[in-house]
Each structure stands twice: as structure tokens, then as C-alpha cells.
Image 1 (cartoon, protein in one colour):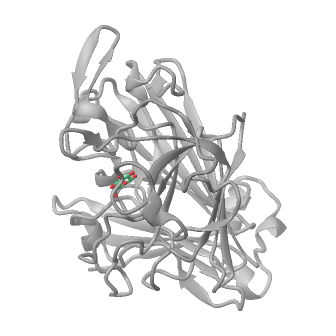
Image 2: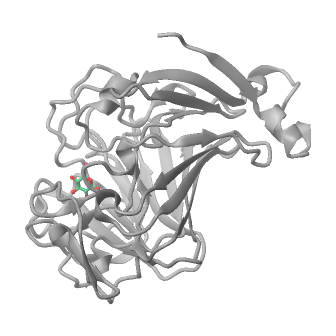
Length: 383
Ligand code: BGC
């Protein structure tokens, strides 16, 4: 495979934006010169469609990698408290891994993230039938959700910070959904070691929409054991219980006094075997973030051993805490080490699952003429 490298330094982006060159560290010595975006030929899908990888670096040496297949975040490399770099998300080093069966590692998920009961919903007097790919239910957009399509990448200046936008047109009827949906997600790597995700969408027919990123985090490093000793805080006093098929019952229940309570930092593994309900093997629940407008603190994940810390901020009303319950060791990622149960966890910022069936949940309906906009930030630090 030919690998074409086009280096687009952050300073060039800043110049386009007429932003002060100094802001990017362009022209100065050391790590700062490496800040920018690099585009690499990443092979072809089985249908022969070329896939690109974008490598974003900031002045602190943090690196993220994103591919046009599924607008997927394939790698995140951050230092520990001694400055030692590690890859802190599950994933593969080549396209093949993503083309096979894998549980949405780092993918952009849509048109509707999580489950829609029975793969069916009524809207404006019509019943829509969706692809069912999780028992009788629809999961993460169906058989060919946004994680399995090829997005178009565009480099836009973003105040001098390395940034790439992925765009996709989801056609009317795709996986059963109504309306042509123009959707985009912009990944920006900020100088505060943040991955900033900006989602946007418009439609020409009323449609449900719920977008998220499905990164699996292990702050000790991908392949380095489980996340059971990570400490987690979630800024939520309530969660939405689920039935045996992991479909919300519609209730919104306090976490207080239960193993679901992460309002103060606690080891993920401390009460994982006592998780109520049917979720097999641990947490797989939507947490109801405290009422907010704009960006709010959603969660903090800490790894006491490495000192790495992840703070999650979002404009979304909920976050799905999934403790990697269905990972069963059959997949080997970039380290070559099998990903067993709890090898990583997801903090998927989102609207509540199955919102289309629950009038009391925040609406997931997008109307023609409206623009959906949503932001999530994953901020990395050490302590
Ligand atoms: C869901 C899990 C599902 C996983 C797929 C999560 O968002 O909540 O139930 O198994 O995605 O990898």
C-alpha cells in the first residue's frame, strides 16, 4: 500500500484563518514544530473506497488519529505523570480491524445511538421500520450505521488548533430512517490536551437523531488490564433503568444509596457485581446529567497508577456509562493483547436511549429548518 503523507502544519491553518502564527508555536523550536495535521492514505474498503487517516498533534506532544471510515477515533496518545506516552483507547493499527466485526471502537455513532425498541417508531402518523441488529431491537444506527460508512474529510482552520471535519449525507430511507440528513463531526485537538467534538446536522424530513462517540478508554494504556481500578465520578443524581433487552423502562430513578451512584469518585469495580437489573456483567446505563444549558461537566475518570485523568464535558443531557461488559477476549487490538471483559469503558454523551418512545425524555427529533448542534470535550491531564 502506498502511504502518501501530506503534512499540514497548524501554522498553515492559522494563516488561512488569519490567526496569530505565534498561537500555534509555528517557527519555534522543540515539540511545537510538530503541532499540526498529517494526512495518510489508510487503504481501501472491501468495495475499493479509499480511506484517509488524519493525525492531529498539539504542542504538548498529544496525538490523536481519526479515519474517514466511521469518522472513527482510532488512537489517543497522552502522557502519564512521568511523561510516558501510551495509547489510551482500544483500537487497531490498520483498516482491516475496523472492517471486521468490532464493537464500535472509537466510532461516530448514528443516526440514532443506542437502542430503539423493536426497531420501530411512529412519527407524524407514519410507522417507520428500522434495521434490527440487536435481537429484536435496533442498535447504534442499524446494520450499516454511521460507524460503517465513509465520511468526507475537510480541513478547516480552527483558531490555529489542529482540526478535521468529517461530513456525511445519510440518504432518505437509509437503515429505515426518514429524510436526507447532512451530518458532520469536527475533531479538534486543543492546546489544553482536549479532544473537542462538534456535531452538526440538518434534515429535509422530520427524523430522530442521537449522535455520540464510542471511544473505549483505559487510562493505564490499551491492553494494560482492566478499568476496574479506575476511579469514576459522574455528575448525575439519576439514571434510566433498563429491561432485559437493555431498553429503558421510561423511569428516571435516583442513584443515591445504590451501586449506580458515582456522584463522588469511586472505583469502577467497587460495586460492579451488584449492578441492578439485567445489564450483564456491569454498567450499561444512561445517566441523567444535572440540568444545564451549554457545556457542563459530565464525568471524571482517574487512573491512580499512571496518574492519567480524563474529564468529560458536554452539551448533551445524558451519558451512557458502558463498562465494556461484552468484550470477551476474542478481539486483539493494536497491542496484540486480547480485549477481555472490562478492558476499557465508554462514556458516551448522548440523548437518552430509545427517546423516540418516551415523551418524558429530552426530544431526539430534528425538524427540517432546524440545525442540530452538540459539543463534547474529552480533556486529558495528570495528577
Ligand atoms: C451499549 C452496549 C453495547 C455496546 C456495543 C454501548 O453503547 O450501551 O449495550 O453492547 O455499545 O459495543
